[in-house]
Amino acid sequence: MSFELIRTNIIDRVGWITLDRRDALNALNAVMVGEIASALAVFSANPDIGCVVITGSDRAFAAGADIKEAVDRCYPETFLEDFLASWDAIASLRKPLVAAVAGYALGGGCEVVLMCDVVIAADTARFGLPEVKIGVMPGAGGTQRLVRAVGKAKAMDLCLTGRMMDASEAELSGLVSRVVPASNLRAEAQAVAEAISTKSRINTMAIKESVNRAFETSLSEGLLFERRTFQSLFATHDQKEGMAAFVEKRAPQFRGR
Ligand code: CO8
Image (tube, rainbow, N blue to C red; front, side, top):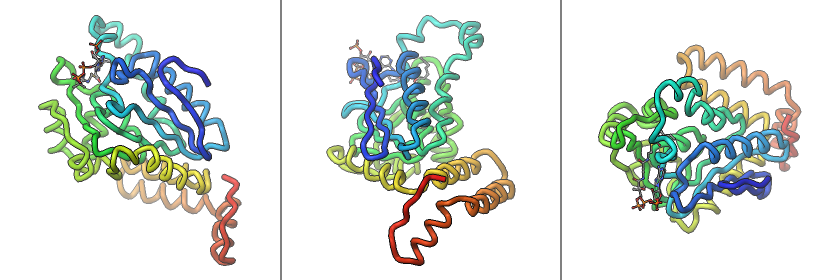
């Protein structure tokens, strides 16, 4: 795959997407979001890939949507084009998605992080939704996903003041899965993604779908969804293999189905 504003590579069943627009702190313009969507579609269709990692540079995961691209937009155009709807491709990836975040993750960059399943933050990471400072508001899920991640009081604080929080506050708030020294970020993200990739693919995809149901439905409906999904895994090769391997004290050989 060859792109203008992102780089992609595959390491041991893990697909990597590196945002690569350093002169603009990885500001997410239409080209970059389109390229991310294309790369995700390719990784999604590749049965050898069990997990995807998205990352940026040392200085910025992404400092937001591209403000310069949006400054002259008007409402009818944004409505007719359904502006920002293309970002849904990131949230709708069915394979697990890991964010490896160093530096700024602001605005749309923070919203991409909120679409990810596991968030590994370097100790240099800074998160925020500063749209209020430029006369708008989060538009790629920030007001909804941040509340679910960190609760109403912290989300209101961040959205209404536009302030940034550092990695340790983000971890304490529940936005981040783990914080690591910046020099270990890629290795830690690869280790987490590899740990996911070596599991049964149908299993990890079912777990992601089930956890995400918790945000969409009542507890009783979510529990029912979980139980039916759990029961359905008994129709897979990998359930037979995983349990047999445990009983026989050997490593499982998953087929992803
Ligand atoms: N969009 C466009 N360009 C950007 C962005 C951005 N979000 N962020 C940084 N850049 C550019 C700067 O303009 C600058 O370019 P140039 O050298 O050509 O002037 C370059 O990146 C480096 O940035 P700075 O010189 O500002 O670097 P500093 O270290 O001084 O500051 C900051 C770093 C604090 C991150 C600062 O750049 C900043 O505040 N950036 C904007 C953060 C922000 O407000 N993000 C939210 C954007 S809005 C959004 O994400 C969703 C709603 C808006 C919809 C628009 C959709 C397209």
